[in-house]
Image (cartoon, rainbow, N blue to C red; front, top):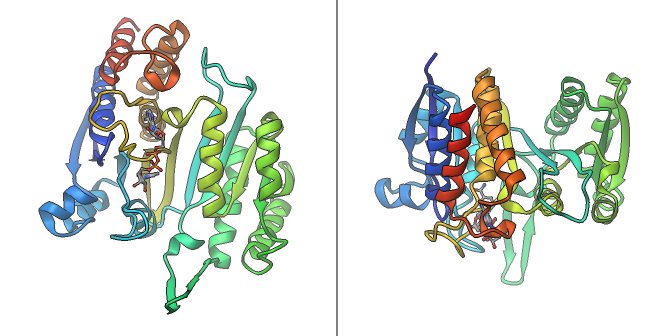
Length: 339
Ligand code: NAI
């Protein structure tokens, strides 16, 4: 069966890692018709919009996106295209796993946790008002529906993926209303799923626990901002941002939509140098292949990737090696061809 998937190659290191990932996927012989569209600065130059109609229509038609990182101007300029996409298609659940990889040396070797990040509310709703020259009000948005659906999702995810425990991380001691509601929704969801152990922790304590004893955690669920920050921390626990992957899942007009993307950004410091590690986007693509029931291709890529890590001869510089993006990807393709 041929699949139609929208491809956003993004910017910075986006095009380099996207080309690698597409080549790797194609080497498994899975049939995908990629609809390459623009978003972000490139789209603005061509269409005068960062999220043009053509791109939105492609996503509406295909319902599945493989997306490389897109630069967001810091402290000025257009609103994050990443956030706009998540909000437009109501992709409320962002799943970000962190697990040790073969031969990637880190201070801990038994990390295996999943962050479920709420993906549409909190300060990412972009509600900021200038009260006067010296005062800004930034609003942390929380709705009952938003809190309920992500907490329910976390328990259902735990059951479907044979996990044992879900921990909620909030700052409900300070944000008594917004995080307080998140916590209450978590408690309600926990009561509906007694087979899964439910635990509560404050976000600051979670950070300390994660850098001293991360293996105590299984599934973690939290509001948007905490999830964003903590998932970079967890990427660091298992080898760095170049390895971290994610799925954005939601329902738009009663149909399932999903965007698969790396956790990292467009890495302007190494863009265009053939140095980027494509693993984060590749592992996101593995999740995408599982999602479209191409499990054999997903498995082949995973086996080949882990083999390359185990051998340790062709690693990119973020992992202490000296292979280029292209050499690393070619090594994976070589392994796939032997499977
Ligand atoms: P970043 O994740 O792009 O880079 C942080 C550090 O990690 C840099 O030193 C970079 O070289 C390194 N790094 C990241 N990915 C790597 C990879 N695949 N291989 C090797 N090294 C890698 O974060 P930064 O610099 O804070 O953000 C840059 C831009 O990316 C910003 O405009 C930001 O808004 C955007 N961004 C976009 C995201 C998305 O599209 N989903 C997510 C996060 C940030």
